[in-house]
Image (cartoon, rainbow, N blue to C red; front, side, top):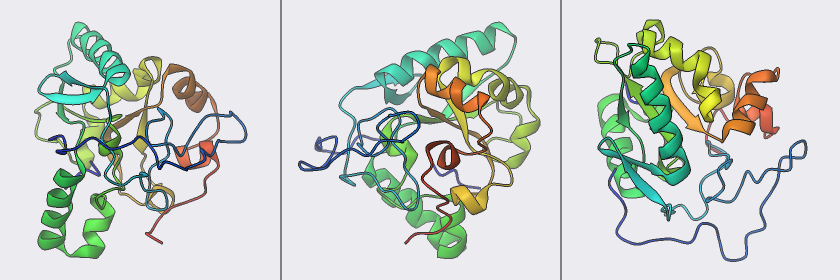
Amino acid sequence: MATESADPASAQASPQGADAEPRTDSSSGVDITSAGSLTVMVNKHNPLDPQSYVPADLQEIEGHQLRAEAAGAAQNMLRDMRADGIDVTITSAYRSYDTQVSTYDHWVQQNGQVTADRVSARPGFSEHQTGLALDLADGTGCDLQACFADTEAAQWAVENADQYGFVLRFPEGQESVTGYTYEPWHFRYVGPDQAQAYQSSSASTLEEFYGTGPAPDYE
């Protein structure tokens, strides 16, 4: 199954539209609309602006790329997972707009658009394009599959990822809110303060946490 989620696009784009006015979550005051914000909300109702956005601070991490702050946090998290004896790797992180064109088109050709929209984001609507999302794997045969939830890697991440600023982005049973099937491998960086506040809240999804409402389908 595809992940909602690496090659950089050829040209840099502005982090947000020239005249865009950032929208904030009323409860926390964080910016959830600017493409360059660590807390930007990206889903089927909220594309990146501009859709060709390229993060300005991408850094290499184990053969992939993430924004600098997320990369540092991910490196610390992977180090601590491995120190606990867990064999874990990153299977996907930043994806450019052009890469997502190819990824999405592949799943449309493979499964049809209705199914593709449940497992892969359309270009400009993918969290991977923000440089703040990563997919974990452990090579046990369940990579990018729901059974990954049963692995030590997934269980460790669910229990501890918020300490590093990551949250499980597409939880089980929340497709009617997030728009995507369960992805126990896909973690999104929002920063430690936001991640821990999210984990302590009653919210089941970032949509609920930031009050943006469900985004099950494209508008």
